[in-house]
Image (tube, rainbow, N blue to C red; front, side, top):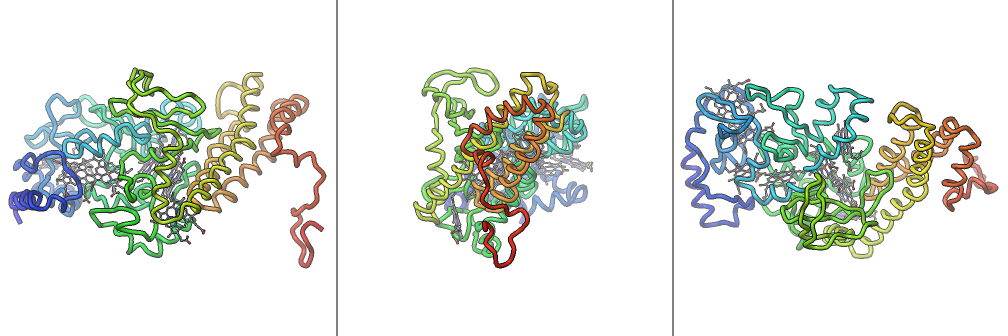
Length: 481
Ligand code: HEC
Ligand code: HEC
Ligand code: HEC
Ligand code: HEC
Ligand code: HEC
Ligand code: HEC
Ligand code: HEC
Ligand code: HEC
């Protein structure tokens, strides 16, 4: 069917059955389907035909949204190029998508995801630069976090900063993120984005092994067995209503459940900071302009209407503050679609107890000892040039994060064997001996007595032992005989 006919049909259908079109589009169908876009399609049927064929299968092609509707640029844009007589840009940024999808754009705008570049920039020199190098930034970090896209003199994109579809990429128009990080181009499908695989290409690795955690959980088990009941293709996708077989990452972190609405801000329902040396509960501060910021619950929350510094240092007026409790309640609303209140709350207690255990037993003492070693100049100020710095970093960043993520998403394996077991092993058998190497045994003993042995969690070090399982359990004997 010629595309103008498709568009006409689309307009008619929208006006008769608006509910058929779940994706709410913020402008009128009359404002897209630029006839000049037909030329892009016909030539790109031959040149890079794969992407054109992907587009043909998309909801966009179905609705008559063509290449030019997305790639059109204004001559003033710093990444504008003249291409076959048209002014276009290669990058279609979240702001460009927002012309038609205002709601998703506004939600994504102030989210944790959109801060993924800012959050690493101050640590890049140490982690990427010292341990890795420039090539790692472009092909590693930026692929997940996003780059600051650099435009060369002729309007083309600098290969040191593109391609990537990093989740917080800073685009030439100043907007952050890239919608194609979850919605692969040029299909831009919502069904595909609901799959766990939309998240796991970034959420895998030592500090965010959420793919492995999910697969190892009962939720992953049920998803695997009942994938055909997940209604991934459905327009409406409400947990408890349209599907009940299992939750995916999206269900818990962004999906609709019962009365809870879907949201493109993945951080809203998370109460803790889990990827930190010591976890803290966090407020979510929402500013009038839609920007957001997290603050530790140990500080007193800002008042509505007051002006405070935002993440970038500029002043912002506080519109609303979500307490850690509210954020937890939102997450629990998801669980309650499939589980009882008792199971949900007891599970959360088990999770919170693991976080507290990590904090008290390992996170806080290790941090205090490291602070002492730095302030007494027993370590050089340069990060990552001494063995104990790697041990400490991995303690909270690798196995420490894994234990906490494992407990939050119900993988017993990651909570214990891949998580807290390694934390304990490395704390006792690497970290403490390395403190002695660095500080000498006398100073080390004082530090360990002050920060470690003073805590109930480590009393066992001083007590006579009833059993020793290290040699294994002999057949027919009790381990503690
Ligand atoms: C010119 C308007 C326009 C622009 C620009 C636009 N879209 Fe769309 N989008 C639409 C229309 C129309 C639909 C189809 C609505 C429907 O079928 O309910 C749609 C549907 C979608 C869907 C749902 C697809 C599905 O599987 O049902 C996604 C996801 C989406 N767009 C993402 C994007 C992204 C990402 C961008 C920017 C890269 C973008 N859109 C730019 C108009 C636009
Ligand atoms: C973190 C992954 C992720 C990112 C990034 C993302 N989306 Fe989505 N998007 C999803 C998921 C998952 C769904 C399906 C949600 C559902 O049905 O619960 C979706 C659905 C949509 C829909 C269909 C909404 C509907 O009501 O049918 C549109 C339109 C859309 N996204 C546009 C965008 C735009 C525009 C951006 C960039 C500003 C974007 N998305 C970025 C994951 C993402
Ligand atoms: C006469 C053929 C032709 C027409 C018409 C055409 N293109 Fe292209 N386009 C090409 C070729 C050839 C390339 C280069 C392909 C390559 O490098 O592999 C290209 C490259 C591109 C690129 C990548 C640019 C870059 O270097 O980053 C984009 C984006 C693009 N075209 C979009 C469009 C859009 C949008 C239209 C419609 C306004 C359009 N094209 C019309 C042939 C065409
Ligand atoms: C819904 C909006 C949308 C539509 C419609 C669309 N594009 Fe794109 N296109 C994008 C986005 C988003 C990117 C990714 C740019 C980036 O962030 O790197 C992209 C990238 C590209 C690229 C460069 C990346 C690559 O894979 O080579 C080319 C070429 C391109 N588009 C051509 C086209 C052509 C030709 C059409 C029509 C058949 C088209 N686009 C339709 C949004 C769109
Ligand atoms: C495979 C994708 C991926 C790569 C590659 C990657 N990151 Fe990350 N990074 C993530 C994800 C996902 C998180 C969020 C973890 C969480 O909060 O659960 C994250 C978090 C972070 C954080 C915040 C706290 C933490 O967990 O450490 C910093 C800082 C960071 N990354 C820096 C970097 C740097 C620097 C590089 C490159 C040397 C890099 N990342 C490479 C995906 C990646
Ligand atoms: C392109 C890479 C990428 C993709 C795809 C991605 N994420 Fe992320 N995600 C990140 C990075 C990087 C961070 C850390 C950002 C930061 O701390 O600012 C992060 C952080 C998060 C957080 C932590 C929020 C918090 O409170 O600290 C959650 C939850 C999350 N992502 C869920 C998801 C889900 C669910 C999906 C899939 C629908 C997804 N992500 C897809 C890269 C990605
Ligand atoms: C059954 C619901 C559920 C599923 C499924 C789920 N998560 Fe989570 N996730 C949680 C809960 C609960 C937390 C802890 C929230 C808090 O901080 O209170 C969490 C924490 C996280 C965090 C850590 C945020 C931080 O503070 O650093 C990330 C990242 C994350 N999830 C990503 C994912 C990804 C990716 C998937 C899919 C592979 C996934 N989740 C599947 C419920 C879920
Ligand atoms: C869409 C439905 C659905 C949602 C939403 C959901 N779950 Fe589940 N959950 C299941 C299914 C199905 C199972 C496997 C059946 C079973 O319990 O044996 C399961 C199993 C579990 C188990 C294992 C219980 C056991 O006996 O081993 C825990 C714990 C759990 N879920 C916690 C949660 C939490 C916490 C949330 C919310 C953050 C949540 N679930 C959200 C469907 C769901």
